[in-house]
Structures are given as C-alpha cells and as structure tokens.
Image 1 (cartoon, rainbow, N blue to C red):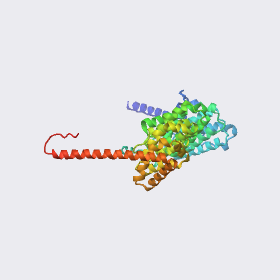
Image 2: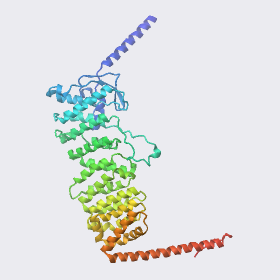
Image 3: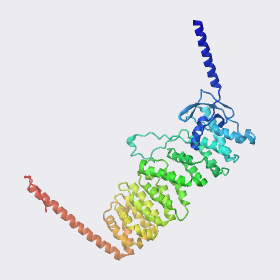
Image 4: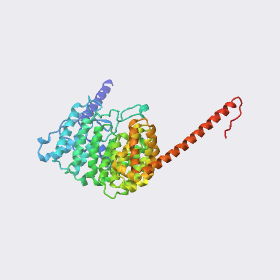
Length: 505
C-alpha cells in the first residue's frame, strides 16, 4: 500500500513539473497590458487578442525579470532590436512598429538598481526612433500612428505624485522659493516627449488621419500633466500643446474649453496648480491670433476666466503671462478696457502690498491701450483707488502709483479729465506732500502737484481751498469729539462713588 501511495505522489509531481515547464516556455503577448491601457487612451474598448500585436524580433521573456505596467509586475525581458541601418528599406516600417511596441514597456525608475540593462536598451531604442522620425523616412499609416500613440500614452500618462509637504506650512508655502521636484524617470520621458514633438511637427503626419488617435481623451491627458512639479516637463508640454492647437483645428474649441475648466477649478476650488503660467503662455499666443471682431465666446473667457485669475494669493507665479493675455485683449478691442479695469478694481488686494504693486503694473499697461470714451466711463472709481494707493504707507505702492504721471498717454488722459480727477486725488497729494515718511514719495508728489498747478492754476487753487475747508471741518469735529470725551470723564469722576448711570447730552 505504501509503495502504491508513493508512486501516485511521484506521478503527480512529475505532471506538475511538466506543466510549469510548458508555462515557462509559453510566449505571452509582449504588449497585452500596454495595449489595454493605450486602447483606453484612443477611445477603443475592444478586447485585445494575441494576434493584434506582433512579438518583437529577438525578444525573450523570462518570468524572473519584472516589467512594471499599470501598477503590476509583468514578467518580460527583451534584447535590443536591429538598427535601422542594418535592415533593407522594405523592412524599416515593420521594424519601426516593433521598436515602438518595445518602448511601450514601463520600468520602475524609483529604484535605480532595477532593470539597468533593459532601461538602457529602451533609452537607446527611443533615441533611434527620434532620429528615424526626424529623417522623414517614416510613412505614418493608421497602424503606425495607432501603435505610436499607444506607446506615448503608456509612457507619459501617469498619476502625478506631489512632493510631500507638511500640512501646517501649506498656507505659507511659496513655490518660487521651493526647489522643484524632479521626476527620476525624466531621462526616458524627455526622449518620449521629443519623439511626440517630432511626430506632431512632422509634415508627413496627416492631421485628418492623426485626429483619430490624437483625440479629446489624449488632449485631456496632456492637460492633466501640466500639474507636474518638474518644470522641464511643463516646458515640453507647453510646446507640444501649442503645436497640437496649431495642427488640429478641429480640437481648438475643445482645448480652449478644457483650459477654461482648469482655470475655473484653480480659482474657485483649489488655488493650487503648477502649470498656470505655461497654460497662459499658450493662451497669449492663441489670443494674438484671434480674428476681429472678437467673438462673444472670447469676451466671456476674458471676464469669467482671465480677470478672476487675479484673485489667488499665488498671482506672482503667473503674473507676467496673465498681464500679457489681458493687454492682448485690450489692444485687439479697446472697448474691453472698461470691463478689465472694473474687474481689477473688484479683485484689488487690501492687505497684500506686493500684489498691489502687480495690480498697478497691469493697470498701467491696460491704460496705455485705453481710449478716451472707455477711460471716461471708469475714471471715477479708478482714481478713488489710485488715491488710496497714493496714501499707502508702503512706499513702493505709493511710488508705483505716482509713476503713472511718467507715462505720456496716461498723463494725456488725466489732463483731458483733470476737472474730475484732481478733486478726487488732491487730498492724497496734499497729505503726502506734508506728512509722507519716504523722501522719494515726497519728491514725486511735489512734482505731480506742480504738473497740475502749471496745467490749471485756477482749478488747483479751488481744490486747495476745498481741501482747507474740509480740513477745518474735520478739526471742528475732532475738537467737539475730544470735548465730549473730556466732559464724560469729568462727570464719571464726580459720580465714581455711586452706581448711578451717566448720560451725556
């Protein structure tokens, strides 16, 4: 009985070992997992089978060497394919596809000790693809484009991992002072980005055919990557998205709408995004190409997306690009100046002096492109705010406001409307001339007073007389208030010993 039992056990072990050997020699599909992921990117939800993608030349699969894709380990290892120079012209197209499929394999770059050989093979293969695409030897058929976009999607479209920071310091966190986070996989990502850029810019790529694969889903994934903390990646994304906008006219409305949604979420919800400056830089070029007269859609974009971007605390990160976009609109249609100026006044900072200086800079650029009718409509609220800036104890704010008189166009607008403007700002000028602590602000104020006096002495003296009358009234009110408090203190002192309430008439 014991012998029979042992013989059965040995037979079972031999069968299981045979099954393991057969499974070890099986040739699984090289890009099955990458194809599933990439099919999502191209909007294709069909099931993939092994016959969909051919296995690369000289590839060898080993269950002991991991490949990382979609967060799970795939058992695969491969060797480098022949160079394009080593194959005849008739086989270069198929070799290109095989190299593209080979580069769809994703490795873990967080561990620099893993898969060193495979990573180097992939890097060299990507460089070969860049050179091959640059040489314009590729015939970009639909099948080539499909595999190419799958490979790019597999490599680029990933979950961005933000740099860990203490929650207590998030409110005081300044991205300009913090060192940017560098992606460890950038040496490979850079080549993929360069490859995508060459593909988009290639004259051999037909936009009508490529739009099937460079679709809305692909564009949305590109826009999501703008939140990367790596500035090198955002720079590539900026160039690529701009090329996509130029080449695929059918996607232009969708790209603008998607950018709007990013701005809405940034302003109204998160106030945290790494790529606002790059997106605005692209928009500056787009706005520059808007045809006249401007569409209502573009005016709504200005009022609902661009102007509210002045609200977040981190305005300094993208102020220069935003200022360019705003002035582009006003230069194209000067009638928008009134809306822009009132929008700036709506979001004008109260306690942030550095932000106030930036607002004054934008305001000066807008006023340079403003014509008399638009200026006339908004000059009263505008110069009430400028008067408050002139009285600011922060000398840079007051100085920046006084610099408006150094601009010939703005000074011309002020001269023509001096009868309205001077009475508004005269108290601020007089107060600065008497009491401001900073010598530069004091000197600039005296220069501005002299400009108005030389321009219209009668108006100046009238404003001075009104100011002195108001000052006298304020002195009387102040004296009356002090007298009332003094009486109150005397009565309170007389009745301090009793609990009787004190009433002052």
